[in-house]
Amino acid sequence: MSTKSQSKLCLLGFVLAASALAQWDPYNVLGNLASQTYATSWNPARRIAASANAVHVVWYDCTLPDRQINYRRSTNAGQSWAAPVALATAVDTWPDPTVAVAGSVVHVAWYQGPDSSGGVWYIRSTDGGQTWSQSRRLSDSLGWGSTRPSLAACGSDVHLVWLDARSGWEEIYYKRSTDAGATWGNDTRLGMDTLTLILGEPAVAASDSGVHVVWMTGALPTSIRYARSTNRGITWSGPTSLTTTYAVCPIDVACAGSAVHVAWTDLSGIWYRRSINNGGAWLATTQISSDSLWPDSPCLAASGTTVHAVWVHNYQGYSEVYYRRSTCTGATWEPEFNVSDYYILHRGNATVATSGTVVHVLWQDDRDLFRYELYHRRNAHNGAWVEEEQRTGRPRVGGEPAVVRDIWGTTASEETLLLDVLGRAVRRFEEGRNMQPEVAPGVYFLITPRNHYIRKLVVVR
Image (cartoon, rainbow, N blue to C red):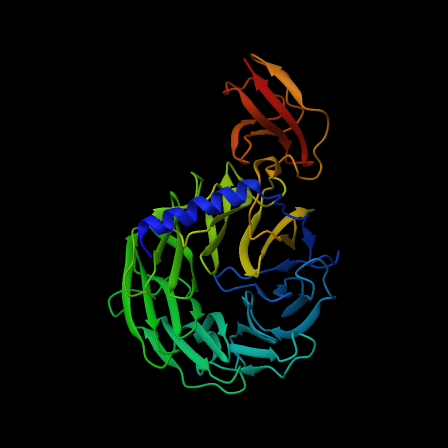
């Protein structure tokens, strides 16, 4: 597609986004048992997957001596959820479960160790998550040798990558099934960097016959490595380097048709690179996040020409989940949207999935008495939103808008943040300090993270 054609598509996407009555639904708490703590994966593996109206989520329970792999599903595009189901028990501190779906077949993998049962394990459901098979070990390396699995599914093909230390050095291994997980082929080594260490967990994506794997390797500066197969994982080319940077984990990849999208984090923001010919050549690197103090955990989803990105935005010790989309295969991006509901101290592991026009975002945070739980939010308009939604449509907004002229000088009764309409903190006031912000005229919000109270301010001169 020509650059001119892509620009026309982008313009159309912006017009539709501005005119639609778009809305992000209120969030759901999926891990909501008061006596338990929940955690999703730290690696870029998918924790949420969607197919038609079915949505599937996996996580693990942190309160038990052995981590319990839990699963939950929705059959109405995330509007309501069935009760949690325990799939397996993993003998490991961070089993990092991952989920993928194709049609009615749901695939889940995780790792455990260090005893004789260690390695990458797998379980599947062939009826949309109603019943499950017996779990089985897929990796040949035992103990701590196999970690950080990532799954992708396309039709009857299932693709699995993981970190493997069977040789004494961590390398990237791949395995596939061509019959929806009933049987699996042999292990294939993809990453063989003889002079550097594998540092970053792998991520995999698949579309049609294309399979794409990314990971990070080397000492600082690091290299984003990429390997691909154009014949459903039979043979592989690469690895090649997409960029040399001061990247940190995790890295993610998504694809739709011949378009491949990669995102990663460095100390200055979330960065993105794309290919529109199935990974054969790559276009320029662009930054898709605003300034942030160590942004974290980028995750991508792609469908047709639309690309969805989420990450954790950190500012002065507080964090929120940001969402951004491109409707023109990553050529340009719409403004960021703050999809989480208020600033808290700890939030992370954001992940995104899409099916049809419904976009799902999943993350964990500890707003409930410092107990990590799962939060889900969806948008039924392909991720479109209007500016009025940003902050003003969030819960717990108290009081009438206050018109503030010149300098206002009340004393903060507790720590308070002043946010702009995009949810970015522009001032921070400690408890007992005089609040005298020098800010440009506009709309702002006062928020106290301790009790999550928000008030809208209109600053005029």
